[in-house]
Image 1 (spheres, helix red, strand yellow):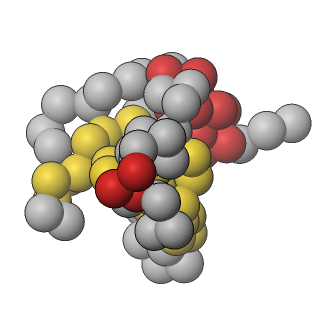
Image 2 (spheres, helix red, strand yellow; image 1 turned 180 degrees about the vertical axis):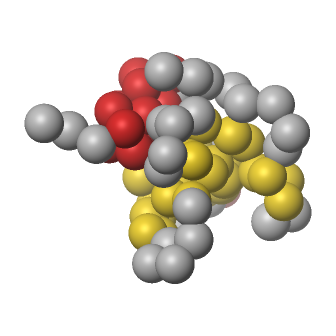
Image 3 (tube, rainbow, N blue to C red; image 1 turned 180 degrees about the horizontal axis):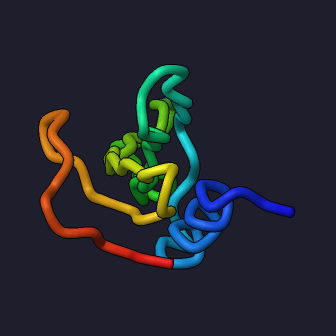
Length: 86
């Protein structure tokens, strides 16, 4: 059986299908699962991006482990209203 946090992560990835998981932090003593998703740039096809690493826009989220609710994070702070609920 999958945990609420895992179900919420799957739903988040369904919600943002073109983003990649960049980092996941399981807070050992805290209530959150912290997720950073990366949105790749489309510099690959442009001459200016030749030979340069892709730029990635990071989007941060926090999943409340007890309920599976997904919250957006801005500057390290969790928004008051959930983005997704189970």
